[in-house]
Length: 410
Image 1 (cartoon, rainbow, N blue to C red):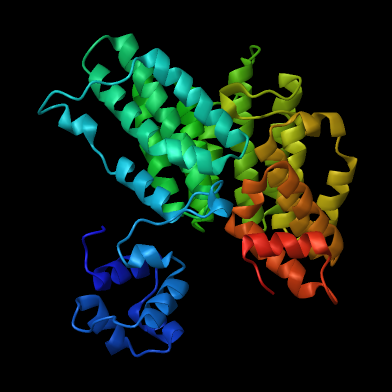
Image 2: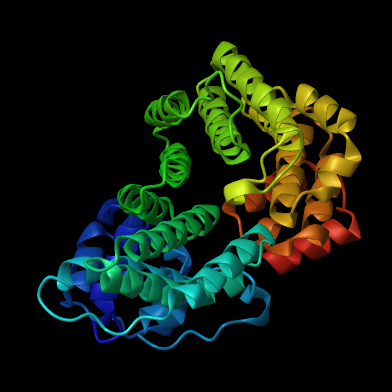
């Protein structure tokens, strides 16, 4: 995109922000005709002040508009920035599987090396190191796609292994992109994982791909389709009369929890209760908190979702009460992303009951544990902004410092 005229780059980012020309013009204080002429290259942008105003409205680095390499600031090193999003997008736009029908695919890394790289990427995500993950994801996606293409017409077991690894990489990408608000890309990556997981011959991986699709749909506001995909696939993976495997219980339980989140978004408290009850039963059969298939599923995660669904239902008091009763040892054994995510949910719960001081404390707890989960997520920015707006007088120094570092004002 660097070679495009600046007007085309403005049009591109306006489209990415889903702004009409009229809305964009209104926010700039310009006419729609002025915007149209800029984007078509009829009118030149020769004032830096105007370019900076445009970058501010579009929420992009001004260097991107100018077609220059973006200098990464130290405080953004652990977040996924716009350059990295575009690199991930470029990797998702590759169609190596189709290319393999016409020409030899490039040499791919050995599957043993790919397995280690994918496992490392999962752990990077679950420790909320989003910046490091974003910098690794484009190459990991290209390598996994090449490996899948290279083995597609060879040994069936090797082909399934390669497809399994690619399916996992798509899911990692989907989860990371959803965290930073790139919901359409998250949906694309999750949808890709469904097809690849079927080729891998692994129902549980396909079930988790459906979970990622459901999460992306929910983030896009497509609540009922999200609920349906989670519940339908959960029903297909429901444990039978024989003792189920731990992995099956974990994936089944996570689909139910995700379904409960969707139901809570539309205020269906009865369905929320039913799905949480089913997940709790699966967690009891599992007998503890485990990370099978990278799910972090177990009794503690069920409690976290009790809090999260209560917050979505607007019942912050119940969320706080469940949080206070939670078994601390199990909670502290969870990986950082899960715990910091929970602190963000409870911060929202405290704002619902008017305790902005405790809400601020929860944000600080999450920031100490996994800074990227707080500093990189649009939702956390909204909660912190709410805390600042409702704080009487000067906010506590730690909150003011966090707000400054996150670039959040009242």
